[in-house]
Amino acid sequence: MTIKKMNVESFNLDHTKVKAPYIRVAGYKDGKVDQVVKYDIRFTQPNVEQMPMRAMHTLEHLLAENIRNYSDDVIDVSPMGCQTGFYMAMMNFDSVEKMSELVEKTLKDVLAAEEIPAQNEVQCGFASAHDLKGAKHYAEKMLAGRDEWDIVFG
Image 1 (tube, helix red, strand yellow):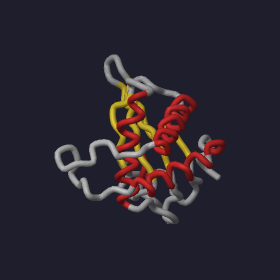
Image 2 (tube, one colour):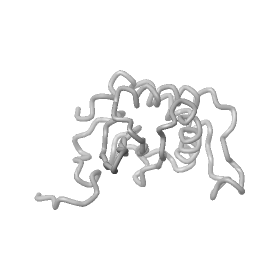
Image 3 (tube, helix red, strand yellow):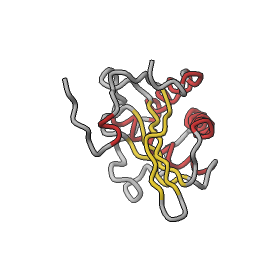
């Protein structure tokens, strides 16, 4: 089957050949002075396992809030629509190794969390849709594969 080249980088990634969990650079955008680096933080195997929405939503809150304790270079943490991971946009931060260290520290914070940041109707658009236990499950699962995060294609 011939696959048409798409404008979206992840649509050109062969999802049948990747092996989650992993962390990879998914793209660069160069400005006049700065560079935005987009990371693909893949928790589950595409087309095999998806994170339940409530667990993923909670993980998004915890990752977005806690990773900023370790780096001022974070622009955004965004869930993937396929519910297999997150994109993280970073400013002038081009190191998968350092990104992996940040993610590891942040996932350890997830495991220690006793509450969900911004879980209220003022700060969250779906405050009732959270699952801390589920978020911790996926954090544990991701951390269990830490030694393989640099292996994208298995």
